[in-house]
Length: 395
Image (cartoon, rainbow, N blue to C red; front, side, top):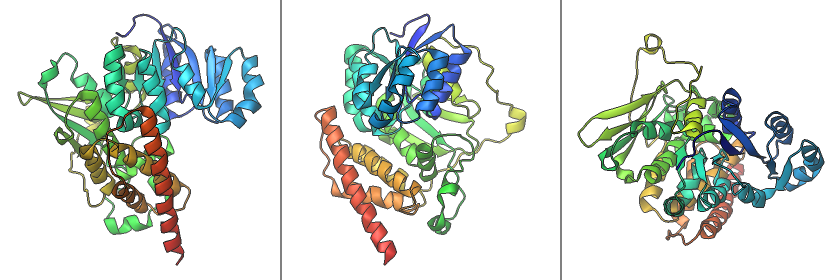
């Protein structure tokens, strides 16, 4: 059950895009929330500023060298300092915590999510990779302990809201919307020459670099399909992606009687964050509202899987199941970083993922440690594929 009253929060990834917006929601509703713990990987100056403002009991610094450098300064602010992956897994089990907000990026968020639900902690989840990689382990564990998983992604929050008050067997289909990213209308031939700067120029959303590149390739939609499968218990074949350039309809559900329900709003992540924090209560906000006289037109298009092969690969991995989504995610993370670092081209991202999936023999994961081992091995193979692409480019 979700507790009532002033909720005690741990925010993982507090200095990232989701974390900063989460703190903005807390700032607006200090009578509703208390910050108990905050984490960062390396942005300790930003973390220190948040510690001064919100006075948490504990913080985690992921990078050990940076943690050593800043430990005394953070402790002087009256907070305990934990370090590394061990710190992340310890802070989610911190005493008297009501809600863990997982705003981490990538598979690093898997173990903290699992440990949180295993401890019976409710989780507000923005780290979609947790369920993409480990949904088969996390969801049963959450049911066993009674932990709630509340979606922060705007699409999954929309589905969650559309299903409020509906019986469990009412859902027939999920219509998962996406803006189409910066290359929705770009011809395939021109994608060969895409720059990092172009790929980071999202038309509607302000997000971190990794998720912005995922939006450009539509891998973000693929990961969200897998996340929706685990969150709402629907087969992947009944989850359809719709390109919706306006980003006003955040997703829809089709019910068994043929009715369709949608959740609409301006592209502002603070709204789904606030709902995940306050649920089952809805809090008053001064966030901007939709003006339908200005919007006027809502478009929906079918995604082009030839132009965006990452989405096709995500569906394939989802249908294969087992460890295949873990391979999909790990290879994508490595390939996206290589693109951001200028080592490979935009279209090479999907090539690296396809190679990694082809080289892997899927199996059912036995534990979180098993999945982390698959993740590590996939990253090694993806790095080999990237070096091959680099070498061929030099010839």
